[in-house]
Length: 73
Length: 389
Image (tube, each protein chain N blue to C red):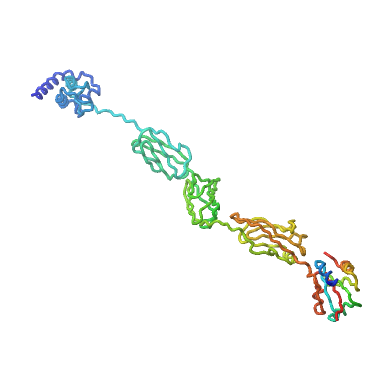
């Protein structure tokens, strides 16, 4: 079964990209962009964080939250 | 004995008529007939000639002719005629010779001539001692041909004949010679079989002929249209004032259609970066030779997307129009048709598909790559924090 985030990345490849950070490899990043739980999603555009959300949720809800914060051309 | 009798007869007749001879009419025809030996004097020699042919019937063209009165026989009447004019001097015959008359000239007087034209003058009979003030005269029976070259400008041509007693002056205008100015293509260049050669003169030429093809004259321009035979070409053009020969090489006919040799995109290309093309503002195609024609950028459905297409030399160029940038994951077709100078054509159909904005596969990042991958991303990026092990 393909993970939900991988599906979202493939289906929206012309809109945004998806990256994964394992917290054990991102201690410096965590200090700069701390989280309280996993999974947590942070949305960046033009080098700036434009939104974030956390928790397990359906695919459509994840997509809706992402699209609500990015500026699509 | 007969001769002696004749002589005595002559002498007695001469003596008999001497006294009346001066009273006779002396019309010239009679005097000329009585001067049988045509020595200019009627004397004993003439009487002797008549006497020696006495009784004969001479022919009309006999010379000398002792039949003085022309009655067909030599008799006493002839002796009497000679005796009656004995001692007279006979005037020389007057021969009337009419001089040849000028009839016409071709070209007619007061017309225009070319420098190398010939003038033909016709007389009613063959003229003698013909001289001309300009050119060279050749007499052939009643025709006198006067050849140049003549000097451009007014021409007064005087013809004199019959030992200078007769003259005729003909006036003409001799046209300025037509001069060659240029030719296109230039001499020694390579032609194709169906090329056109264009000659330019400083004024309209007359009597143009060429040894190859047909000449078309339009004012000062003479056009020679192929087809020419492949190989060396020696083209000679002759006009009323000169001739020139030009050498060319005629190439074998071009039957090869133009090929697409390279380009910004190739047919069937996938994942073409639209951003690179958009930033370059154009798509180019290179052909194997110079062509003319048209190209356009279309969608797969054949809809023109509005880029400006043109064909120049051996290139086809599509220029981006603002707002018509290439998108991601779209199939485009460069369509059109080009033709080389020989008329060989090629249909253009280059299909390519642009890449998606991202790979569609989540990228794993670390502290070391975070800045470049996440903060440096050109597209929005969603970072998922995961706890794995």
